[in-house]
Length: 225
Image (cartoon, rainbow, N blue to C red; front, side, top):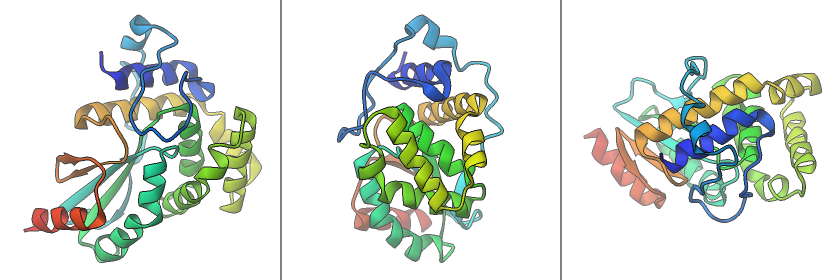
């Protein structure tokens, strides 16, 4: 069984309040944590219909190049990408309609799952990406706020800053079915694309690990030819 399946099943079975042995930190490799046991993990995702999960995308859906980013909200390297290279990518390729950009969440831990549920609570892709910017820019604060209560409290602050009311946020955070479906969706995609670290990029079907913006631009230009 792959490491991704073990982690995903553990989160799905435990729902929104799922605990991992690991905690958010500087590492960007998936670390196994299976408190439920491998036998339970093997079938935990099998019967979940993930068709309700919307792809969050920007740019031109008919563009000749599709760039998929796999990222975790608790990954420092992902925050670095979104604070700089992503803004260049958006200006040069997304806003100009040269690519279709798709963002897919990776769940290293329950905190990343909570952040994802807050971001998706925003609704439209534009609002989702706006919320994601706030989550990444505040990562060093909320992801290391202390215990789980303090961390989710910081995420609620971000949601309120983005205009979400308390009732809406609580409904999103308490939606255990949505949490399990998100994890199953993540698992399906990550298994299909062989994702084992973040950020990872899939450019027209080819997987790449983290890279400089210049390297990414070169790959995009080559894929468009």
